[in-house]
Image 1 (cartoon, chains in turn red, blue, green, yellow):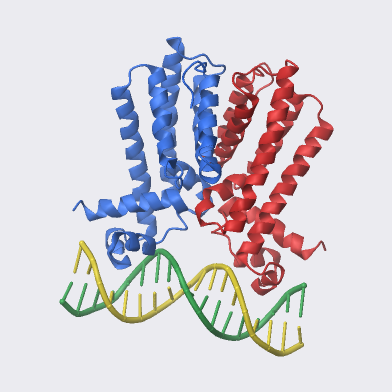
Image 2: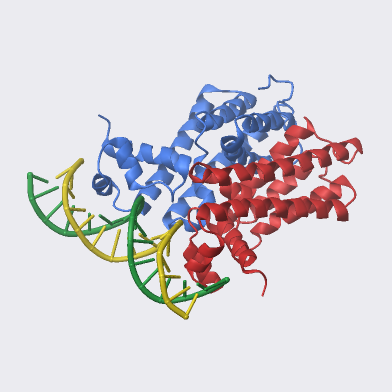
Length: 193
Length: 193
DNA sequence: GTCTATAACGTGATAGAC
DNA sequence: GTCTATCACGTTATAGAC
């Protein structure tokens, strides 16, 4: 059996992305894992502690994902395709949205330590995107107006919103956003969804 | 004094956009309005009833906003500018996000009748945007790649995400997204934020 | 580490007087 | 239409046995 603490954390991550921080409970996780609420409190004394651990988990996952893309894809355009293929996979089962978006929507009711942990993940993603966009433009793979900095912010915002719309209205919302982003970057000649 | 029911509904709308459907309570509204919880239950027997009324309110507000833009602005580019100026105004006080986004994030925990009411607002907004984009392109005011249909979806997703990021990280997130959207549409020569 | 039992609190909701 | 009072329930959290 893998580490119980990790097990709890992963179940909490799924529930957070499916229902939100406020709406998932110790009961939900104990049901899912077959242990009692008290046991979870042993690993994470308060919900705030759990929330902080979750923001750390999300940041580590994102760092690992981007590092893996850098390792397996060389061309900026391939990296970008890999990026939104992986980003979109969270909504494949139809009930999850991106972790940053889920936490952003409850920003005003989150414990302060949890709220502070979100921006790190968003920031590293934006920085990675900005670099990929700038590299790709320099290589002639991308052709877009405006700055790579602003384009990176636009893409994170669009993907965050698209995952939410896709869960509520169907996966084609996500698909159309990706198609349009490709068009915006001058990649419209590529195979579309 | 204006209609009490309307008063309750408006307070509920503010609280929903600030904290989310799950996290605002009858207590919150009774505190704010200086009446008791029981009185609110008299106007809206269950929270689901209130939620349904809220989705109707948001749809009516959006219809009124778009109709007003159409009435006061003639050129598509002016309409678009008015659109995101008004859309962005919800985050001016720094604690609200767009209503559709707030409800989307809690989609899995909303009563069914509430969840169903969201898509109407999103749909009418997309259709309005698609028309404005198509008109503006035909008139030579816009120059963008891809279809007006997909561009409209991208814009709604981007604005939804941008409002959430702006509340958490500051209004410049919103500003940068607008600047980049202008650039994407070939409006980069306009005055920027 | 996990359990049973329980505390303390907030929630949505209802009954019934005024 | 608004009030007081109360209910049933779910929540986070804790104490203490094993």
